[in-house]
Length: 177
Length: 102
Image (cartoon, rainbow over all chains, first blue to last red):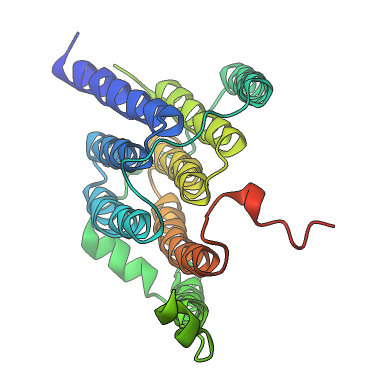
């Protein structure tokens, strides 16, 4: 039992445990905090696999961005201390059944499939390698998807502003209420 | 030493925990959280395959970066829609927003 193995099982316990709590707890604010721990656990897996850049991106974008956005929207839309109503008994049962059957099916397929490594050469996932290939316009370059993602982010930004903008005629009724 | 199968087990479990949350929750913000769990399990898969099966290439890393970017855009748009829905319905429960159902 090496240190690496112990760290792996520790990360697995943190990730899966807080993920389970995030989908079952009835206080929405606690769910957001458990989601935070799940995302940090996944960043830990990226560190464990020695993909440091992806781990940093995961922490910056998910933990620093999306979770904060979710917590803000919880504060804007409802009382954070209020408990959510219990889901119906039948729905819980069938959701658990569907999730378990899917899990069993996928897991048997994974365990039956012999995965074979394709090459022995190792390209280090350093920032300079990632940056060079991401902005390359040769046949292995990723410049076109990169630009598509840029356009998507721009469209999402404009879309967010337009959707969340307060309508001028609505303004009066909201101030009255 | 844990290998590829261990990580695939964890990402599969995470995916179906997300699916379970998506089925049981009726609150839009918690459903969004379940979606984030599902997207994260896919990211973990891409990184594990890149590490153990295609160590000579970086394609899994790029897919992960793109999925993270798309997830961020998706979360921002979803939260704009949720806030707008809260303004018009005073609730973010999916059962209460059913004008377009029938």
